[in-house]
Image (cartoon, rainbow, N blue to C red; front, side, top):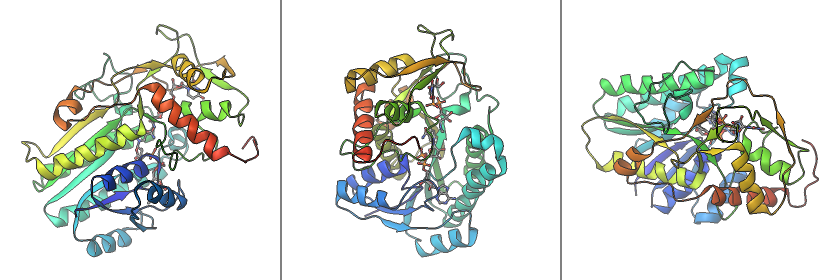
Length: 346
Ligand code: NAD
Ligand code: WQD
């Protein structure tokens, strides 16, 4: 059974990917410092798959610990690297935290893989690297634009660090996956996105407004050059996203490609506006959502949705869920985690 390291494996996307890896027969080792997750997520994973991943709780910024880990787990066949800080606003206020956590850690892990000779590495990147792309849908060869935040810069620079490392390490095979907007939860509602703090993202704010935790959703602008005036994004079910990681790993483990560094866009290929997402919630929940039109949010791009042809053809992967499917899973998750809890304005 091939052993896979999943860093940040108790996080939102990582935990859903651990489930899919276990479903495909991989042995999973998770490293997570619980800075944005909880050890209870392990119980959710086990409830779904019946398999307990190995979990090591330490901070990947601790380089001696990273070296010790790879010496102990010398039989790791692949690494899927989710662990990072991901709050755009926080990255503006505290850039060094982001450069250390999102790039320093990446270097430590690549240094260990470099020692191994043959190794496989998957990196969590983001469509944020495109900024406001000139044409829709966005292909992988769309130009990378100057980052709008230190967070976005860590994804751009992260990809370059991997590209440069692969150039001088032919035994290292790497894939960067540029996620569009991951949403939803596992259909069993055993795992989902943990509600930590006031949500910055649209989906958790919608479901928390729907459940009564938030008074009202602010729609950040309806005067954009789009059909209904609100921004357009490519919302992809987190389970579809997780399955793409298994497909990417299997490509690295089997195919001997003419290049050892590839990039793939992961989205549905369909754009949805903020108002369309609200309408999806109202269809799925049967409830009206309380929202108002508010001023635009600084840094928002007008639209971003993926051309998924490359992932479809090369990875043999395609998103299967609709926006309503993802919304239904998100709403079911919200209802489950709020069951019996006071509806406080956290
Ligand atoms: P998340 O915060 O839920 O998961 C990240 C996990 O990594 C958390 O469990 C956290 O505790 C852990 N972690 C962070 N720093 C660590 C460290 N130094 N040592 C050990 N563990 C550490 O985030 P997510 O939404 O699952 O995102 C996973 C990855 O995908 C991130 O790299 C993120 O930048 C990227 N990404 C996320 C989105 C999104 O919308 N969620 C979109 C594009 C890219
Ligand atoms: C989506 C749309 C908002 C909240 C961010 C990061 C990106 C990645 C994914 C990590 C936008 C609108 C939102 C609200 C709103 N994260 N909105 N009211 O901005 O596309 O991407 O998360 O990698 O790096 O930038 O996602 O969910 O924040 O916003 O109107 O309360 O919803 O203006 O148009 P975004 P989002």
